[in-house]
Amino acid sequence: MSALPFTQIQDSPDSIIVSNGNLRASVAAAYTNRNPQEIERLPFDLSALEDEGIYVNVDANGFGILDRRLDWEALGVELPQNTDVAFTPPRCGLLPNRYRRPLLTPVSQAHSALHKYSYHFRLTETLFETPAYRWIPWRAFTEFEAAFDKAYDNLNKARQKALDHYDEIRDEVVVTFRQVAVDSAQRLESTGAIVPEDFGDRIVRNVLDAFPTEDELRQKLTLRFQVGVILLGSEMLREQRLAAEERYRLEQVESERRIECLRTSAAEKSVQQQMWAEEESLRLKLVSEEEERKQEAEVKEHIRQMKLDAAREKLQETLSPLQEGAVQLRAQIYESAVAMQEALQKHDFLPGATAKKARHLAHWFRLMNFQSDSELEQLLTGLESLAAKSKGKNKRGASNAAVREVLDDIIQLCYRDAHELAQPNRLAALEL
Figure: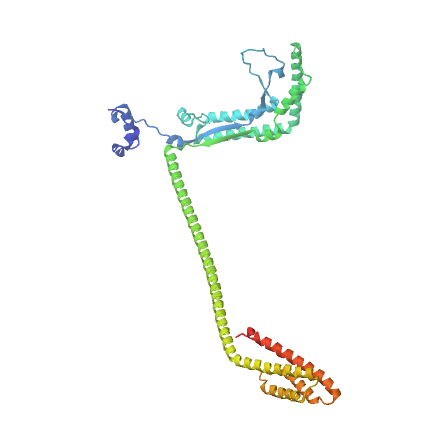
């Protein structure tokens, strides 16, 4: 019997009726070419550790600032050159031991309390991939917590003591390292090495740069314990399933939100297009109305022009006989005035027949003056009166000059009227 892949075994019909340990036994039997009944079921139950206790880890941070590594030159030691032998430089405490040890002791006390009241299991350390967490049963947790709190109180007291005497500690450290610098310089000079003038100041300056400040002592020195629980595989699967369901729900919500945004955007575009369509329709309607008004105005103007032309033609037909009569009347008056002017120039006086003719012309004009030509009538009336008063020799000369002037005015008026009648302009201002 050949070994079957795990996925093929899991998907086979036989895997449906087996569960948990039986399934794993079937897989092991398939890989080892054995009967599933020969596979032993080894019980592995972590419920006792999960229900009867808790995992605790003591964490101490920042205590490395209490120490520093010195170089060999600061100690006045010269190492041999070009050697393959490694020399590890020594470490020294930056604080005096009466202040440094009380700060370090609570860390050891906390770890000792953890090891006293806890158990370690190599299997769980292998699963956790760290030996930091140790299992404490619930019945021992109270004693561990009391011991840890005592260690924490000791740390706070030692820290407060160091802060209260911080300046004294700093001065003591400076004095100590100045003495070390003097001794180191003497040792270097005894070996023939050249010692710089600022050798001691440089060593003290390096120590002061590494010396912890008050804020570092107050904030960086931390001591705590962390509590952990076992996260079972089934719980991880459940969390993954819940996470997948939550992710799916978020995706659904995001999808619905995107769809709603698309709907809103489409609705806005539709409303905008509708508004544009209404504006375009209104614009086209206004343009159409304007064109209709223009066409209506053109049609009205054309009809008005046609009516005006028809009225002109009708008026022209009505006034043509009258104009012809007026022209003949003025022509007759013009001829009579010219004849009287020639007789006046020939005889230097107005003969009786001519005077009579002038009076007859004035009387005849009054009868025929159907256009009420007041100016011509006034001139003819003046001519009639002059023709009636021309008596005596002296008066004759005066009246002849006046008659000649009146005849000139009559001739000019008749000529002007005849010219105006020849070019009629009165109908140009006619409006309906």
